[in-house]
Amino acid sequence: MDVNPASHKATVLVVDDTPDNLSLVSGLLRDDYIVRVANNGEKALRIASSEQPPDLILLDIMMPGMDGYEVCQRLKADPKARDIRVIFLTAKAEIEDERKGFELGAVDYITKPISPPILQERVKTHLALKASSDFLRDKSAYLEQEVARRTAEVMAIQDVTILALASLAETRDTDTGNHIRRTQYYVQALALQLRQHPRFARYLTEANITMLFKSAPLHDIGKVGIPDRILLKPGGFEPHELEIMKSHTTLGFEAIEHAEKALGITVDFLRTAKEIALSHQEKWDGSGYPQGLVGDAIPISARLMALADVYDALISRRVYKAGMSHAQAVELILAGRATHFDPDVVDAFVAVQDAFQAIAARFVDREVAHRPDLLVPPALP
Picture (spheres, helix red, strand yellow):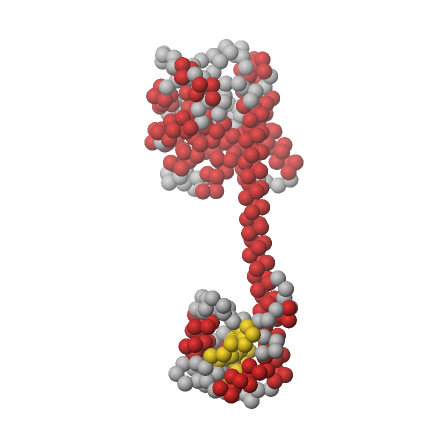
């Protein structure tokens, strides 16, 4: 925006009940500005709130009916007109009159009889200030929009990068399919159910639920470091193989921590991702790994992921098993209440189990979608 008022004709509204004054002021300004006139306050207010308001108002005070003070007061109370600059142009020359004018929101106060050079320079100055103010306001609005746009772009890139990194681990395990997407939404469903719970409300803020959703796909990123001969083994693990497989938790934690240190700043979703990667295999009774944490010592993020991960593993087909039915998975999770899982997390799962089923159906693995026979579950022992 050009801040030079000479580059275009601004509009000045002159408000005075005396025709000679209207003629005099109009004559002094019309060469440089578009001049509109109003001989009473009501007309001035209509023009000021119109679709094409003036840039500046020269306002007499002593007018019959509505005086200039009331006009100014009503202008400043109108959202459409309150930013129009008002200069009082009046014969009232007392200090108290000037003080009242400024208190009502005027930007200047010129006394009659009019001095043409003073009037012209004051008008020119205040229009230049208005142009500068408009430029800064428009620039600020543009910058706010640009920051919002770029923030959204960065967040989108961040989300895609997280999913791409998570997929590096999942694509090595040919049976996992849409596991990372399903567990992401399972965790979100549990968090939303628990956000009013006294034990979880402080942690499950809107921001943290967002971080959980973003971080969940990285829970098995450590699988990248597990050899194929173990990761893809169709049968049970030998003891030494099991220990190697368990190391995916610490491998994931260390990889994310290394990335965070390289970044040089603390990032909320990476902190949450580290918690989930390291601790999602911990169990409520302390029999999990890698640290053997017990109860509330297990981060909430990891407790939610633990249940989401197990549920999806139970209902999903693997090279060594068919997927269980939802009912069978629910039965096993209930059996793990207060041993494998936080009891309150299990209760939340029961409350939102329909949502879990809907998520599983929404992100069903392509192979299963084409071969319903793979959904046939084994008999429970």
